[in-house]
Amino acid sequence: MGPPGAGKGSQSAKIVEHYVMPSISTGQMFRDAYSNNEPIGIEAMKFIKNGNLVSDDITNKIVALRLSKQDAEDGFLLDGYPRTVAQAIALDKMLDEMGTKLDAVINILSSNDVLFERMEQRRVCRTCGTTYHLRFKAPSVEGVCDKCGGELYQREDDSHESVMNRLMIYETKTKPLLDYYDKKGILFNVNGMQSFDKVYEDVELVLGEF
Ligand code: AP5
Ligand code: MG
Ligand code: ZN
Image (cartoon, rainbow, N blue to C red):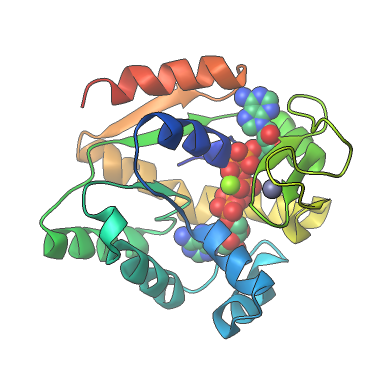
């Protein structure tokens, strides 16, 4: 968990390099569905581009479908889900049915100044979703993905207005969830305003417990 731009996707990529399991990002699933012209992606993008949340109903459904795939049987990492208390309750029910539970909720903390700068400088590969930062994680060739040669673009929701809205929604709808997981005793805070590797070291300290 963490506000927009905190580094959830960046740390997820590092985590699944090390611990072999699927990384399930609801935002990325919506963006992929949109790129593939799927109706769910086109519907979701109406909300995403302005920084609003997609409905709980649609979001819970795509997660339930994704968790039912075989590669999630031995564990998985969720990035950007749940984001509302209703989603957290729906997730608890899905996990109950699967006979499993969350081991840890890692919350990446950051200041708004850092978040704005990161989202402005972010570029994403249209083909494989790899994320870059024009200064801190620049591609070798401008506009081209190092991993797959795909085209890099700026996300539709990284405009200043969308980012403002996303931060506001994070504060009102998502932050209350931290309390939900803290009460369950599984919330771990990590300082996201450090280098990629230092943040990951702190994440590993948490994950090493399991
Ligand atoms: P989503 O894709 O999840 O976006 P988000 O939560 O706004 O978070 P971001 O992906 O923007 O940031 P991040 O934390 O992954 O940071 P990143 O690693 O990229 O969701 C998008 C939208 O989809 C939502 O607004 C909503 O509309 C919809 N949606 C998704 N899930 C939903 C749900 N559950 N319910 C309803 N709607 C939902 O890093 C950011 C930048 O900073 C990059 O350039 C990166 O290279 C750089 N960076 C990262 N870490 C560091 C570091 N340590 N040092 C320097 N630079 C860094
Ligand atoms: Mg992300
Ligand atoms: Zn790529």
